[in-house]
Length: 85
Length: 262
Image (cartoon, rainbow over all chains, first blue to last red; front, side, top):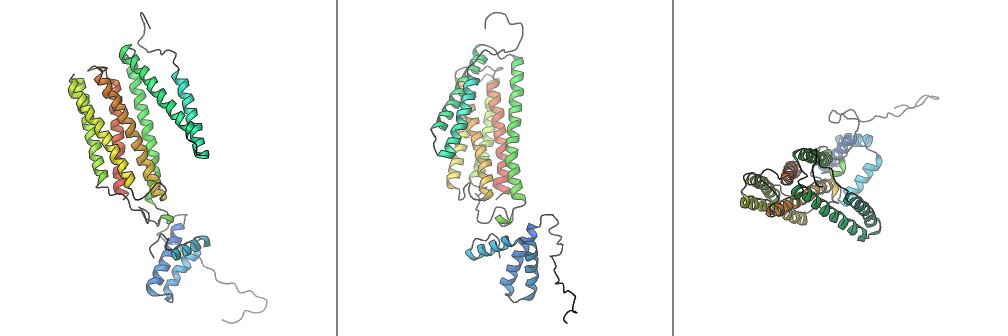
């Protein structure tokens, strides 16, 4: 990509997760949860470098409050996470 | 009360029990606060003793008015029936609240539970072991209490006493089995919303079984002391209604919480 013209701005592309028909409610907590689960299942099975897993990471990063995913990361490390990953 | 009474109503006489009962309830309330905040149970024990003493003496007076003073005319009984029905309806809504809490938590389990019911890490009781036996015990007691009622209406005194005694024993057997089940349970009331909903719902049911058994035991004692006639025995009927209500609540608990919920 070429450098922007002097005096213009380059706007980074920011995208949230798309609508998912499994989670039609205003409360999107479950979408966040499923994205987190799917990402870790995906990387556990296909490895950290498997590119398609990144889609789920994008979903949970967009849908989850950071405090939740941080908390779940700690729970996975200590073996107390409630989800099956 | 002497002489002619130109109406069928029971105009109650001054009694200390409403005031004593109110004082007992206040003492118990403050006693519970003392227990929760200062870990001191003495005032709570006093409140409980006062409550129990009030119940014994108030209902003793009611039995005297009903059995020995003849105050419970058909008109009075009509009011007692309506009162008992309304009381049981209020009890239905009491339990409805706990079923609401249970279904709220179990139909869409939160992410903290692992989005499953029973929650991750909770191992529920086997619905087809002791709880199924308890279902059979309570259903049988519903049969024996009806047997007692028919024996009473047909003037078969010994049969009524025997069947009522069997009903009471089945009630005590149920309580014993539940106590054992609680003791053996691999989860506690502090183990997630599963433990909370399970023990609050089944615990209040157990309390009602104990109350119903006590009610039936009072009826058994009154039957032994010839308080009932074949046509005048509302105390027994009220106890039987209450017992059936407790039985029905158990069926819902069994199907929803023990069976579906596991």
